[in-house]
Image (tube, rainbow over all chains, first blue to last red; front, side, top):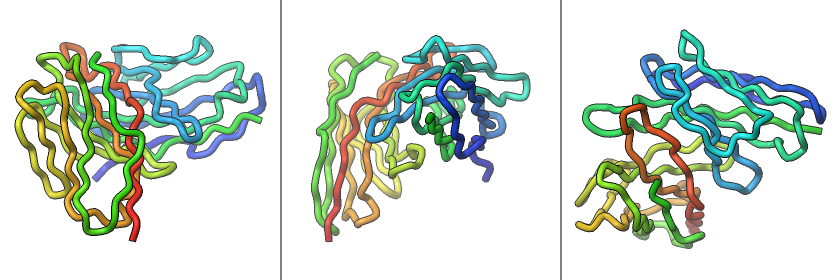
Length: 116
Length: 113
């Protein structure tokens, strides 16, 4: 079965550089989420999209932006990178409502960003 | 959004039953309770979801009392491979999708031989 695809899997950047992460949700899923997980920390919600519209924002820095495109893939853009941005970035997709209950989130394998 | 509280860590031995309780005192009428499992450097994985009473699937059971202010994930006969972090999430879809699903501080389960 198709899963959530994230790219790149690993990314190394210098401070103040820009990075773009991509997420390809499971076909027919209408919701995409982005999470940031630092070393030894719990996943932190960044932002979500429902049917290509931003549905909610979490602790996403102003230096970060995200969008969902017409083909439902999503991109997380991070500018002026800081050392503290080094983390695993997970994308998840779901059906907002699945057979009478909220759909489960399916997570990608994550993109590991290292900022030097 | 309902805030959740779980024990920071739990220890168990292979073959034992493990029960992890999550408190969510401010749960809303439409909120569902969902549990996820996460291994190091992997994305969380869905375990089970429920609204009230008891739900059981092939890997776990979820017990939700009538007041829904807490829930208990039950893992029967754990093995070493169940060593992971377990998260309890509370939320609903609303009109515009499953919004702002916040992971609280999960429970780090260590299963020993």
